[in-house]
Length: 189
Image (cartoon, rainbow, N blue to C red; front, side):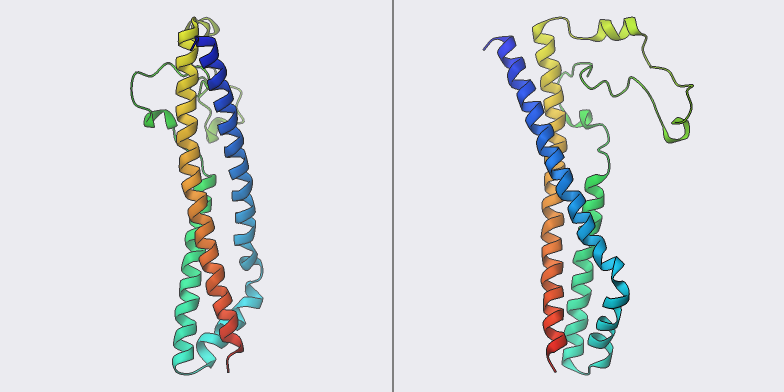
């Protein structure tokens, strides 16, 4: 396979991975909205919990309390996983092994912008324009190495995010099941 074909393949792969990450980001945003609905309805939910866990006596009260605690646990775990999902991944290049290229495709270290200097116009690039141009890949092989490096970093990000969002949705489904059980318990006299 020629270097040009390899580059085209890597460009297509990078584009596909980025599209997958964007789609998962949308799902995570929807999940966050769903997870915050109970917070907005806490004044309606609280009396039901009180009724199920305090005003009933005996075995049913105990079951309702266990189910309510389990539901709350899975809801909180789902919320934490989803918030962890939307947080930034710290330098995925540290997870790539082997001889790494400079990383000029993404150029993450070109500007060192932090929260405390974000409004300031006083920060400058970490390299001059000439230094940056010298660092850019010169041959098709170097371009392929840069693209493969970028692809590997994106695959790490996608894999991490996929595991978090799957776990978040699973915990949300389990919390919804426990909420359904609580709903059934509220009708049992």
